[in-house]
Amino acid sequence: MPNSKQPIFVAGAGGYIGGRLVPRLLAAGYRVRALARSPEKLRNRRWGKHPQLEIVRGDILDYPSLLQGLRGCRAAYYLVHSMNPAVDDFSHTDRVAAMHMTKAATAAKLQQIIYLGGLGEEGSGLSHHLQSRSEVGQLLQLGAVPVTILRAAMIIGSGSAAFEILRYLVDRLPVILTPRWVDTPCQPIGVRNVLHYLIGCLECPETLGETFDIGQPEILNYHKLMEIYAEEAGLRKRLIVPLPFLTPGLSSYLIHLLTPIPAALARPLTEGLKNPVICHDNRIAELLPQDLFDCRKAIHLALERQKEHEVESSWTDSGPIHPAEWSVRGDPSWAGGKMFTDSRRVIIDAEPAAIWPALAAIGGEVGWYYANWLWKLRGIIDRVLGGVGLSRGRRDSQEIYPGDALDFWRVIDAEQPKKLLLNAEMKLPGEAVLYFTLHELDDGRTELRQIAHFLPRGLLGLVYWYAVTPFHNFVFDGMLCGIAAAAKTPICSGPERFQEEEKPG
Image 1 (cartoon, rainbow, N blue to C red):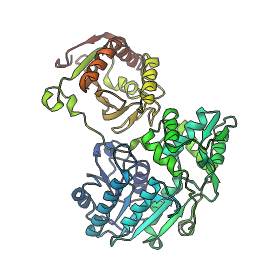
Image 2 (cartoon, rainbow, N blue to C red):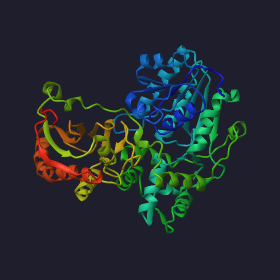
Image 3 (cartoon, one colour):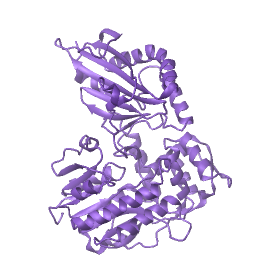
Image 4 (cartoon, rainbow, N blue to C red):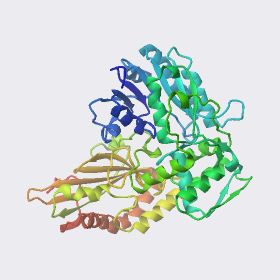
């Protein structure tokens, strides 16, 4: 049981590992304080309203908010990494964030920092990404607070970026063309084993100030990993062909086209695959014993989660929710120009609670209820242009929370059974949102509204809006009818256009 009533601070609670660590800390009896740029993302998780959880708004790059969040805490998890070289030098961002954490942890008088870093030996030509993760650990160690560093290679678990690359490549390609790194030795680890080590370090004094390598016992290469995946997925044996001329840039673009992982994230990951990542210090296996899954079992468990649609967290969870204030009518000066709107509604003979499940299931395998071939075509075009496309799908087939990725949309707000607000993340000459609301009428029926807002960027934005507007007439009307049909509820009137200023019913 926890030996202190002081909260445990988690930086990166909204990310892949953090989203699984927090509920396990709570289940173990710890008080948890989670730092979030978008607190609503965490509040709407299954565990978001746990009485032992405190969610504080802040940013690791905003020192005052970080320091305020750390005050009174006993220990902190540092699960933050920036991996988007398309935005700026992610190593600089990581450096600033780590220095903030070091300074704030010292000022807050923490007893321990636990950092999940990456395997890879210094001096062996580490990739930019792995070098940055190593540097973060070194910067954290400069402070007065003891730091426990866990160094991991590929983490195998449903929803992890590395596993998703493996899954989509092997699922989709009978012949897999790879760079030379396919024969690089590695020592992956299952996500459940990672979480066991992370939590165990809190109550193990021997881990204070130490660095440990974590991985499953077997050393193998990515070629073997692909073969194991194909076997566990029940696929035919894949032909894996190394090509020496495949560069990290070309490899990352191919991954971008064939998997949900964008090139900006795939590139640092693929560059790191050239480095051998094996464990040299296995002391933690004795300090915190557990059943270490081999790769076959870890892949099997991850596939089970995928099939059962029980993916706890995903690589798509990371990042803040960007509000769409510009989409609110009556603020054209803030928006910076003309905003186009397409508003439609339908009256359905049912209460909102009966319609919500169909609305909340939109996207992913369910699709968009009408003209799915057009949505797929738009996704393919977006992917070719460097966007996210439709391949991200959705984390859960039924539940939907703010911050979730939904094909090429991001959920900004989801209030059951009243509203769903989506922000477009596809490549666009402007910004777009799609807004659904359910208004209960006096006679027990429901008005389902679908409102699309578009803020064009330049002349190309205007051309784009007028080009796609004709498709709205049947796609959007079809979606409204499709939602009613999926909910098995009759339509009383509509679909019809309306002016957004009108009040419901």
